[in-house]
Image (cartoon, protein in one colour):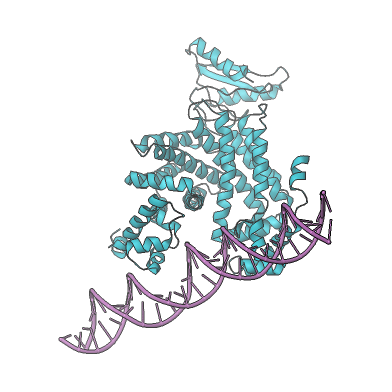
Length: 244
Length: 244
DNA sequence: GAGGCCCATGACACTCAGTGCAGCCCACGT
DNA sequence: ACGTGGGCTGCACTGAGTGTCATGGGCCTC
């Protein structure tokens, strides 16, 4: 870390100044009504310097995603064979949440911007896509050799990202109040229950839980403990068979 | 259909001419090396007309996605309560495959373009995102009221899209030879097995697939159709009880 | 301390995507 | 024949993004 921080430490204040100026104007008049010239004249720097720090106007809205993506890549590259792959990509996704949670008000402002500016939404998609690819590549490695390994990797990566974003967005919609961690844990737990520790192509199963409705020609096997209350058994059967 | 085709029938040949000219140049010199002026001068039309038919230069690469998205929305809006939701979104995804399969060589050429031009990749992501949103909105409706309904909807939509794209891309990488249908069916079958027909928060179960092993003192209830083949019933029992 | 070097910045000019506007032409109906 | 409306064109303009060169200040070396 020290070498990296030494290499790119001493963050140029100009970068922060540009971000600050940009967001002031974006919130005042909107993203598309603000030109790069407006930003640089408010920040008191030359127009060329803007594009030195941000390859495009959109990039100024996501100033920290590049770093976060690098962090995630590093996290996944440090191969910790101890944990289960699905668990590990869920942990990687939590890194992104951490970045958002570091700066709740900034994240909420950015969320409102991206929600209503199509160009920014498209840009955000490409960022999210890179996270998803990082997770999928990791899983592809871990699943190498298994049947349908890359398919499983892609699907799980997409599910993790979708679950993460679902929780993140609902937190952002609530103006960043409270702790987003619990909601994300819940959402990712869902994914882990669905995909976790499954070695073969078969999905996981609830401990006893409610069974799905059955088609007329299904074979349904209901397994429960001998001391299960009878009403429970009946309800399970109703659930499974009744509502076809 | 007749009203729609009457409304926008008589496809202007200019649109096709622009697409053809654009792709000729894109394949010759590359996307970024081709300006809109190049395209319109090759097509022999005015520059302004290009932007009448395509809101942006990227749009000419995906000339039929708008129609396909409308088809998918219509397909999902025609509420067919007969089929299971997951099954239905999988069928909706197959509509997209159908569009790609209509024109294999065109699809392959486009795939090669989008693979290497970041701007086109970003555009494609925003298109795919709209498909995914359509699926997710449909599932949110169907899951309304259930616990974690929107979470499940988002995750399943993402999984369906990821599986579809996984199969589609491998078909495109093989130069569009053979039938992509089987691979997509296989990939979507995976998703259906994972998520299909699960009502509660618990993970899914295969349509018939392997049930968990039962403890010695479990009660096992077996429900099957009168005409279910015996070997099938026996196998289910073995699966459920045998491997404790 | 003087000269020289490196690098960050700034100023300018240029390309190209995308838009608004005004005119034009052709096909159609009266 | 004459107006009219819609599709097409050319033109001018904005704004993002890039290449290039000059400047100027900090730092190292002699």
